[in-house]
Length: 154
Image (cartoon, rainbow, N blue to C red):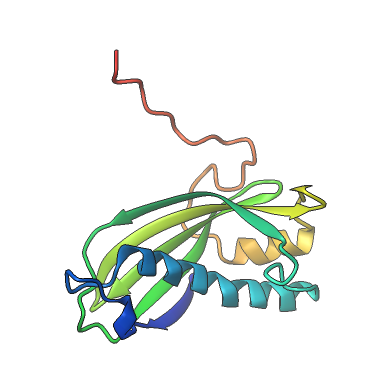
């Protein structure tokens, strides 16, 4: 299930090139996580991980496909879970405007407690599974590694 949020584009988000600044677009992804984690806290009956510094971002990757121009009033962010580890989750984000995909991104988040990785409870894993997107065969494999690129500098 994809989790969808809408974000207002403000005047201050526009850069001198007449489109929404790339950093602001990434902030929309951060904002999209907030209601996702609030709902997760309600589902678990536990404090929100945002309130207790319950995760760290260990990786962020973004691809900018098309700019969002200055006439945009709002953008839509679609958030889903791409992969689950023991204590980590890879979240996927798509930013849409005017029926066009503008930006895709992923973040790898590690849930932490007492300064180290905190394995997901069965209830948290169940919540995450509800938002798992696609049929990636490695999505539930905690030991799956990202593909490596051959060294082209030989």
